[in-house]
Amino acid sequence: MRPRHVVVRDIRRTTADLLDALAASGVAATHEAQGRAGLLATDIRPIQTDAVVAGSAVTVLSHPGDNLMVHAAVEVCRPGDVLVVALTAPSTDGMIGDLLATSLRAHGVVGIVTEAGIRDTTTLRAMDFPVWARAVSAQGTVKATPGSVNVPVVCAGQLIEPGDAVVADADGVVRVPRLAVAEVVDAVRERLASEERKRAQLAAGTLGVDMYGLRPLLADLGVVYVDVDADR
Image (cartoon, rainbow, N blue to C red; front, side, top):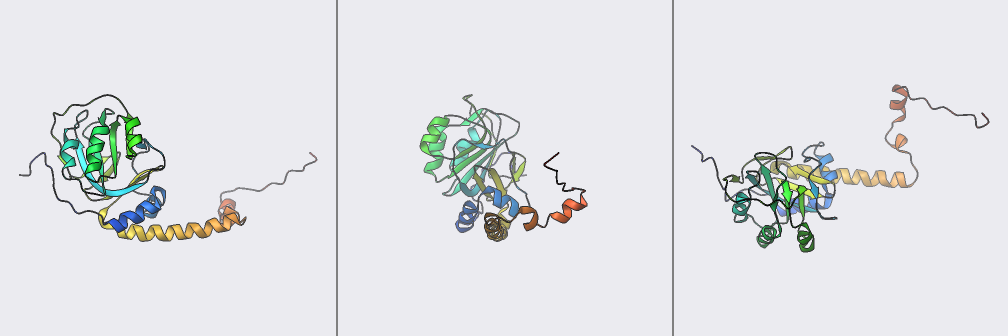
């Protein structure tokens, strides 16, 4: 029988070149390129501005108000990882502060995504350590309840498996399944090239209704253009 609470030491990670490509593309393009899937709930917000990270997920399943398993996770983190903290029940307690962030950074973690709260935000911003969280709260936590590390979790409405790619920026957080990352990167590149062509057309004055061929749709939907007599 598998133990109820585990810390999985070794996981398969997304390769650095693919992560770099996703970081360069950003959350919005990545989300669109994989069929508008994988976006975490919109209340998971950055505590800083202009930060962009893409890393392999090290997942944590924690009891609310308890950061014991976050401490346990530090040992298995590797350079380039993103720590993803999910909870067994809703909580906005400040589970991670600057001391844990200092430890995570020392082990190469590039950012944190948590559906709980974060604390010591002024120090974290000064450290330039990227965090996406559901809340900012000075409410402290205990270290008493077992959980698991590197197991599948549901974080902010999305299933995230260990080693999946996690991309986070000012637009939010998106998950890309590890086995689909290469395909998504190709799709993102095609999408960005298409957007660049459209951007050039729009900058030259082309209307979106013409570029996207929307006039027939407007007509089918019953939209009528009317010229108003200026003398009336």
